Image (cartoon, rainbow, N blue to C red; front, side):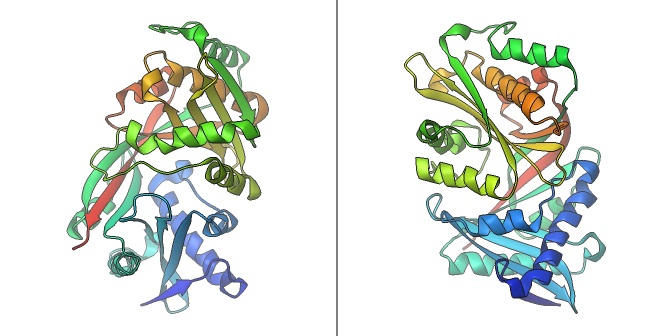
Length: 341
């Protein structure tokens, strides 16, 4: 077996790059079946052009065949001691040392970049054992956070849309302290220019205002330019974006939810961000903005029939919101963390 660098942006590496993303996707499908989140190569290539992080890709080769895929990335703005690892082994080539070799490569890359905390994640359905658990533990990784993966089947039903619209407007919301004092706005694809600063301010607080389990996280640094680049990258590779925000009576943006529609498959939307600023909680704004965004998706993005979201197991308020909106748990995501000596 040989480990080689893959330049995802070099046309000369195109065939290997296709095999590389194919391994990642095959691993996901083996774990989650029809609910798997898969990615086309051009979507990954787009994030490799980012101005806000650095990434390196590697392939494990058995002869001419790519049997393992690795991506190591680190932010240029946030958590300066941390590197994130995306490691997959083709289902036909597990238990042959491929994962161990790639993980050692990830740790070498992290050290060379001055990073000493590595974080990787694994995902599986509720009714299956996660093979990443013994693998991670045997290599010195500890469970930092466990999240519930939930799925909503979007009904093609006018009555359902009307019910979601009523919730978004503040009607029928129990224990809602002041449903009328906040204004909600929604948009498909590119948000208005005036939203970027407010969206960035909320995104900056995502890792510190939401439950983080045992993850070692510092506040992220987002500004309007970084937020706009992030959404533009999604739009440039053909994805659709649905965003709903809430403004308080002074006009300040205080809540955000954002969904991204996959290109493969096009009927699946993934939850990227949902956060209500801590000082504005207790008014069911999380429920309202998510309901409004679901109405937007059902009305303006009709190919979407499923919405998938992830929430930390101890994020009970957002899990309750999802339950109220009809989401059903269908899997578990584990985040694994190791500190290098």
